[in-house]
Image 1 (cartoon, helix red, strand yellow):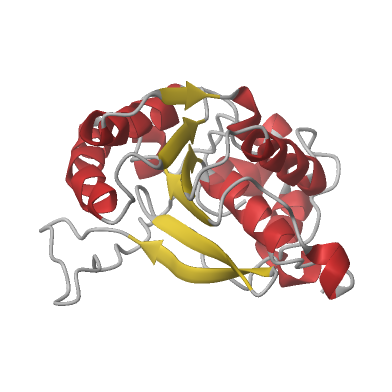
Image 2 (image 1 turned 180 degrees about the vertical axis):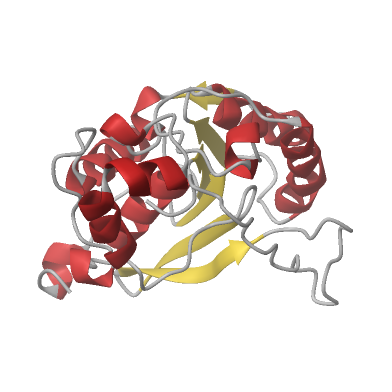
Length: 237
């Protein structure tokens, strides 16, 4: 932990928060780092969004949910599938973009390993990546949570964003230091993490929840978790 219980609380204008990762892109499928570059959803990513959106919407309070998205197309298109079901406006905010990855953006894992082996070793271990460029993890959390702080008050907000950005937001909301970066597994494409403010602290209620390709749902109405795609370079940042 990074501070006292009182200092750790991040005050946001909602009691529940869903952090939903965008659907798959071709770059996800081929293990290419996206960062703040803007490849679109592929056909499977669009199918994922259309499958998950109605299920996710079914658990949200009618007329009381705010939806905000990164303005990168893979997130904005995913978010639009949800707002179409909910019948609410979609807010776009560039502060919810992915963790900027500097010189890695556009490269696949093999290329990163070959060109930047020390950086890759730091990344795999969850340490700060030296000399990569891009963004500091703390800055990602600060800008993304500032976007949420500017939303109108509501019982629940859905932020449609990216794997690395979700990770940094969760770490800040739970007051986790860099040494805990690998505490939670990465989100699969179109999976979400849900947090709630309880007893003065943010708590994780669900993590990496989504729909399998065949669309199964458990008897209690909760979707079965979708496995993280092999080689999904945008998921672990």
